[in-house]
Image (cartoon, rainbow, N blue to C red):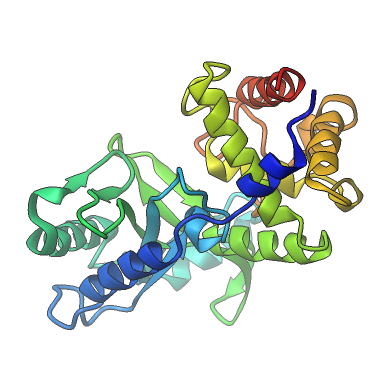
Amino acid sequence: MPIPESQLETWSHQGSITQSSNTYNTIKNVLEANTTPYAGKSFKVFLQGSYGNDTNIYAESDVDLVIRLDDCFFSDLDDLPEEDKAAHKQAFSDATYTHVDFKRDVLSVLTAQYGSAVKAGDKAIAIDANGSRRKSDVIVATQFRRYSKFRSTSDSTYVEGICFFNAAGERIANYPKLHSANLTAKHQASSKWLKPMARVFKNMRSRMVDDGLIKAGVAPSYYVEGLLYNVPNDKLTSSYQDCVANTLNWYRQEAKKVDLVCANEQYYLLRDGYHTCWPQAKCDAFVEAAVDLWNKW
C-alpha cells in the first residue's frame, strides 16, 4: 500500500528554524568581527545547504555557511577562444593574499572562539553542536568565475560561483546562490510543491537508511534537491501521494537521465567521477529504495 497522505504531510514540514537562525547569526558575527586578520579584505558570509534553501528537516540539523573572499578569484577559461584567454592573462596579476592565507585565518578565528569544537575537515571547517548551537560547517572559499567571453575587464561575461580546495588540494567549484535562486523559482513555478517535496524525499531517505534499504551517504540532500529540480511541474500537483508517485514513475520511465542537470544548471546531475555530480547508480538505488518503501508500507 502507498505511504499515507498524512505521513507524507508530516514529512513535508520544515525542521528547526529558530535554533538554526541563531546559530547562523552567531557564527556570522564571529566571522565578520572587525578584529579578524582579514577584516580589511572584501568578503561575504552567507548560507548554503538545506537550511538556507528552506528544505531542512528535523533529522538534518546542520547549518552550512560560506565565507567567500572576493579580493581574489579563480577562473574557468575552458570555453574561451585563445585570444580571450590571452586577454584574461594580461588583465590580471596573481593575488598576494590567497585562499590558503584566508583559510588559515578563518580557522584561527573560529578556533579562538570555539576551541576544541572546531575541526578542519576534508572540505569544510566543522563546529560541533553545543547546547542550543547546532552543528555547523563553514566552507572557506574564494569567488569563482566561469567565463564565456573575455575581451577586457569591462567587456566580459561570466557565471559567478565559489571555489575551495579539499585536503588533497583538488579545486571544487560550485554555485550555491544559483542553486538557491533556481530552487526558489522552481518552487514558485510548481505551485509551491517543490520545497515541501524535497523535505518529503529527505525524510523518506532517513527512513530508508533506518530500514536498511540504502546506506547513509547514498543520497546527499544537494542531489535530492537536484533530482526534484528536473521533475516536470505538471508532475508536482494535487497531493503528496500523487507527487511522490509521479516523481518516481517519471524517473523510472520518462526521464532522459543523461540530460538531467543540477539545480544550479552549471553541471549535469548524473555523472561518475566528478565532485559535483551524483553517480547514477546511487540515484537509481535511492529511487528503487523509495519505490520499495512505498510498496511495502
